[in-house]
Structures are given as C-alpha cells and as structure tokens.
Image (cartoon, rainbow, N blue to C red; front, side):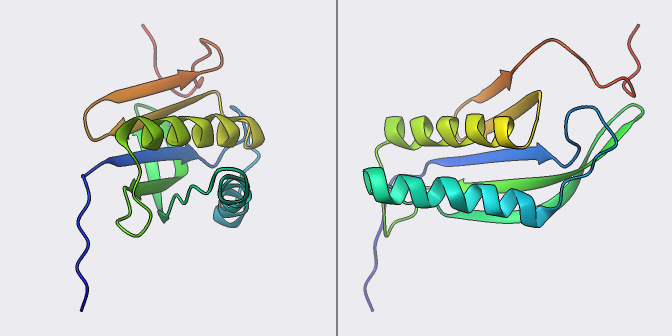
Length: 130
C-alpha cells in the first residue's frame, strides 16, 4: 500500500440556494453542475484538480434561514498544489459560482484565514438591522 502525504490546505465555501434575495430556489444538482463545469475547465486548461465534498445545510442569521450547499476542499494528496495556487483556484471557483448562481456574498473559510467576496452592500431583507 502506498502512502502519500501533502501539506494541509483546506477551504470551505457555503453557497446559498436562493438566487439573489429572491424566492427562486436553486438545487444542489445545479450547484454541482456549475462546480463540475469549472473543475473540467481547470483540468483541461491548467491540469489542476480540485475535489469537493458537497453537503446541504442552512445558513441562519436572525430572520434569515437560507437553504445552502457547503463545498469542502482539501489539498488532495493525489493532485497536490502549493498553497498560493490552491487559494488562487478556490477564489476563481468561488467567483464563477457566485456569478453563475446569482449570489451577492460568499465567505470562504481557508485553513488560515476567512475571505468574503461581495458584489454589493445589499443585505438580505430578512436579517434584522438596527
């Protein structure tokens, strides 16, 4: 049995399943289709493989309860990347998912920092603001 070790780099992206702040709900399958589209593009153009574990969850903040999908990434030992490349490609993936799934704001939890990407300052109207 072969054993492969690599440096530990992780990222978690949570994508809301509401298109914008509308009532239109996306499906997990739609998110996965967009993820696979980007993965295929990365593999063919740069030889980069980003494997994701996909699970359903809810984002809750005050009056907001948004069905969401969580994408968990690791620096997969079969296709290891340097930390800067890992983060670069996760950021690119997140931007593409935000645009294709009509998301205003997405937070990426990396192994050593949290990054928020935001298209504008709008806040979901269900969140109580004072």
